[in-house]
Length: 420
Image (tube, helix red, strand yellow):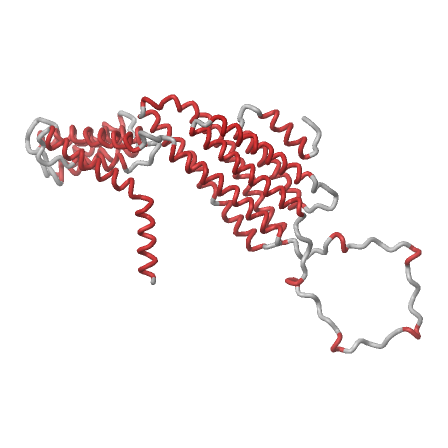
């Protein structure tokens, strides 16, 4: 059954990754056809190669990297063409001169590692594998330019209709996962489930990858909008979302600290509940010593109970207000994600509606957490309350970045703290 599981995994990867495969195949084929039919070059290897190299770059960095790669490949091909025609193909001095001149040229123009490597590899390939045929026409140079241009055109066509759709989907996934994480922390604390709390902490530590995915999505969407002249007016919305993601990053860090405190709170099951800790009895209730006639004999060994195992000693469950606060915070996260997604889609009324709900849910979360203040609270519980407050502040700042002072005042008022 191992092979069947492997086939199913491979099928899932193909189901989610078929678009880049089709995009790369089509771009490389079109680049080959243009080089052969338009230029009449019999072996335009660098046209499809440059297209594949450019499309292999991550979205969001594709324009910049495409220019670097194309220039690097083209420069390497051009230098190799000229040097081989001057010194002849295949000799050691030719290889040395081509690599030296190519790297020097790339460094002189301030090329990055990608450009430098592509230029050197292209030049080396041209010298060792496919030496020039002696003509002065730099076919390979033009082939590289054609491949890069076709790759950029393919990128534009893929994102032409909905350039922001991948970012909207990433926003929804990230916020839904963060909201689900808060719900799992609440369930773990309600049931004093240490294993579930540890699993939630492990998931919280992986949320940084989601935030990085959001940043990559913003870069990719910005690149798609710059390539699409008719949709460049959406770049302003993209900038506001980019500012919001900074606050969401802070919120994710707060939730990670909250999850760590939740693990600690779930482990506090060895201490006696506060309700069972009795104060000293008043003098009127102090009993006199037992008379000798009432003193019983020793207890039989069969009736002697040993110490209670630590696993059977359970402390109090987390206060119900804590679970309510965390679930309200989870709802605020969902509504904030829906507000950002609606804003990206251009649905302003829906974005405002979800932002208002996020505000209400976040303040409700802080208010519920504020009910837990007291002299008997533990340090982990105090930390969780503090992180609920910090997460609510960052979440609301992410929805409305220009309302910092008002957000802080509303959150502290809901918590029962004096106004700033």
